[in-house]
View 1 (tube, rainbow, N blue to C red):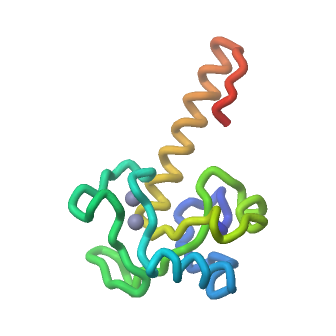
View 2 (tube, protein in one colour):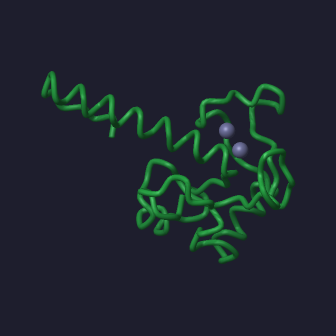
Length: 124
Ligand SMILES: [Zn+2]
Ligand SMILES: [Zn+2]
């Protein structure tokens, strides 16, 4: 996701890649629909195992139209910005938050594991 990673609550409207050629390419491929297939923790079972949130859609509990962002949850903003569109995904805010939360939890668990066992781990 291409916005400040230390402020996970920041809406993807801050995405610096919004409306750039990369954003357009990814969004066209994605059909302007979130490409999450479960990384956020939801199986999206009601929508064919893929999130069906669309760019510009109005959602309950979400102020204004949803704005999808383009990014790659495992990478920093700078790393993601260097990737070709084929390696980037479209994300709705809810899926990004869920994915980011899971990633942070995994890293925290890994750090705790390192603290206690001090073993190398190649996961990240
Ligand atoms: Zn989604
Ligand atoms: Zn999702």
